[in-house]
Each structure stands twice: as C-alpha cells, then as structure tokens.
Image (cartoon, rainbow, N blue to C red; front, side, top):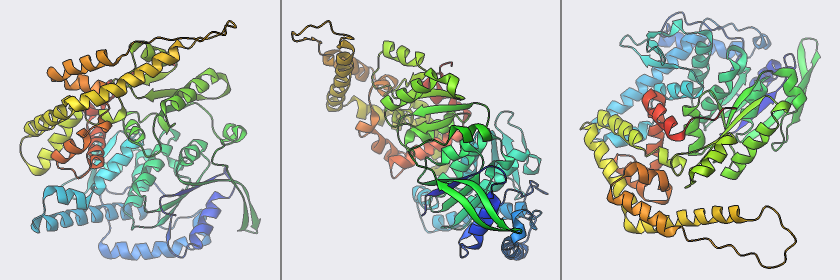
Length: 516
C-alpha cells in the first residue's frame, strides 16, 4: 500500500539480497531495486550522460536487473551515479520551466509555491539535514552540483564528498527523482552509511514519498526499530533455502507490532549505545518533525502524551544496566512552575519554555526568518512583513475574550496539578472525610496575562498561552501568504534546516538536555 513500509530484518547471509531480487522480478515492473553493492563514485560533479545515453542506459539497467547475478554483480555501477545526477537536474529544470510558465499565466507567487511545492533540491537537502549530515547541495551556473559543509561553510564539488555523503545523496536522489507510485526495494541501505545516520536518512526519504511503498532489507536493528513505527509490517528473515545457486524459499516471520525485537537478536547483530529523545505527539506530529531537525544526533520517538514520555524516560533510565539506550525526554510547558520543571529535569526530561511545541513555530525568530524568505520571493521589506505578522499575533493573543478563555484553561490545569500534589502519600487508618482547600489560581493567572497584554509582551504571552487554541496560526499564516498553518509550519522547518541561527534559537527555547 502507498505510504506503508515492509521491513525485513536478517543477519548477513540470511538471503536478503536474494529475496530483494525475487521481489523485483515478480513485481510486474512497478518495483525499483536499489542494490547494496553499488559503487560510490561520482566521475564528475554533474551528469555525464546525454538524454539519449540516459534512455539507452536506463533500458540496459532494466535488462541487467532481471538477471539473477544482479544479486551480487552490478553491470551498471559506472553509470548509476550519472543517472541520478541527470534525473535530479532534469527534475530541477522541469520545475523551473513550470514555474516560469505559471508566472507567465499571471499566477501569484503564493499560487506558484502552492502548485510547485518544495523544489527537489530543497527536498534533498531537508533529507540530508534530517539524517544528521552537515552538508547542503546547490546547483552551480555550470549545471553541476556543489556541496557546502555546514560547519566550515566551504563549498566543493560533490565528487569530493565522503563515501557516506555520496551514498546518502545517491539513495535519496534516486528515490525522490523517480516517477510516482513506485515500490522501492532497498537492499541494506546501511552498508555504506554510518549507523548513526542510516535510520534518519531512510526514514526521511520514506517521509518524502508518501505515494510509494517501500521494502527495506536490513540487518540493522536500530534502523528496523525506527521503520517499524511507520505504517506497514516488520518481518524477521532467519534463512533461505537453495537448490544449487537458486533460492527456493525464505524463513520469514512477522513481528508483532506491539512487541520489541528480541534482545538476543539485537545483541548478536548490533553493539554500542543509542541516543533516544522521547517526545509528545504521534509519528507525523509537529513535535517529531521539528525535533528531528533540531536534534539530528538523536533518534526521536513520539510517545503520545506527557505521561507516556515521562514513563518511557524514567523507565529506561532506572534500568540502564540492562540495555544500551540513553534516553531523554521533552514535554510541553503547559504552565508548569519552576519546581515541576526542576523535578522533570532531574528525571531526564526537559519542559519547554513555551506552552507547547506549536508555539515554537510562531516565535519571534521563526516569524522573522519566514518573513525574510517571503520577501525574497514576492518582494517588499522583510522587516515590514515581520512587524505586521508579529503585531497581528499580539492582537490575537491580547484579545480580552481570548485571555479570559485561556486563563480558565491554565487555571484548571494548575488546579489539577495542585490537587494531585495534595493527595496524602499514605493513610493512618482514619475514616473521617479528607478535606483539601485550594485557592483559585485564576485571578493571579488572569492578572499576569493582562499585564503582559498591556505591555505588548509577545514572548511572555507565547510562553504561557497555547497558540493552537487561538486564531493565531491561521491568521498569521494567511497574512504571510500561506494557504494553511501547515504550509507555514513546513516553511519554518525548511528555514530551520537552512539557518543555523534559527535552529539554535529554537533549541534555546527548548532548553539544554539533561546529563545522563
């Protein structure tokens, strides 16, 4: 099914490549197999094929892939990199031509952006960023590709990238430039990738192509664990039956989606420790997509609500001698006081300095960055656009009816926490009713919000009020030229991937992760 993934986990020699070949051969032409034994070599920084050569080589590859020896021998290893670069450049040029055509029809910049979507080169760079690779690709005036190191800011041709970076570009580039509605069979994507980036890279590539089904064959249990959280199924491959040199069957067992992979299998295949960040939300929530950009060295797992995050982190930290996982957590601020924040921090959990993760998307620095990008696209003053967006956001939050309603919600949350804290830790056998008197927190909260509104304290209001319960997201995103808040929020993530300063600002708004 489109948007789903079949993960097949097996040790080296279990028959994964043979199974990948068999699946490709029986797919009626809808599958595309990405082989593990491809050569990591860019002869040039751009495609070295003509259109006619691209068509001819593509046909030859289809023929070679049907041969059984393609399980271990790649007849097209010298051409595959050039084909990927050719297809990326062709897609990029097609997008540019379509953009010009739409502009000539009199379309607005907003319509152009909505119809074209995120350009393919930006999509590729977002994937690399989410994988934790500190490189960005750009197209030169010579129609070749350069890469820019995010740390040194040095640009150089892509044929000088490391093997791991080349492998990531080849894998991601081949998939995102392919036609729609394909079945991708990826054989051991971790072979040329460090374990710390393989899961993030494959997960990001899959997220970019929800129109496709993916079959991933791997021996990396970390990668399998990450992928098993996506819709689909996970299978273990114990072995393969052979008649001569031809495979005749595979020992496959489906893994219960609610169970963990066996500890013995993990110990046999993998070693070392793994850094995990548990967050609120679900697999496709705002939390996960933003935290993956801000903390690329960590594997982000959505745990549901704050209680589930706390249970996951405290459970793992209290049993550290029995596993190799380093666990951290991040939860929404939700009006927590300093004592509660400190208590969570001691247990390995950071509480946001703002009400909830949605608020980070509408911070001063996020608004300013998106305003700058919009001004570059449509013209005008970035400062003026930012000031208008900020003033509108303030007007929404400072509205008296909004303050009354949200103050009630904050007071109710504070009251619930106080009541839980007031429950006795033990009973002495008393039978009389237990009375707990708690003063209403509403007047103090409402007064504090009123003072912030009068002083036009946008950061203060943003720290306390949940913006998703207001009209702020829809009104601000519309004012900045986006059709939906989700489009604006996607633009923020693109800016985070591109701007080190914005990423650092949002990390500061979250707070430093606690030590182990």
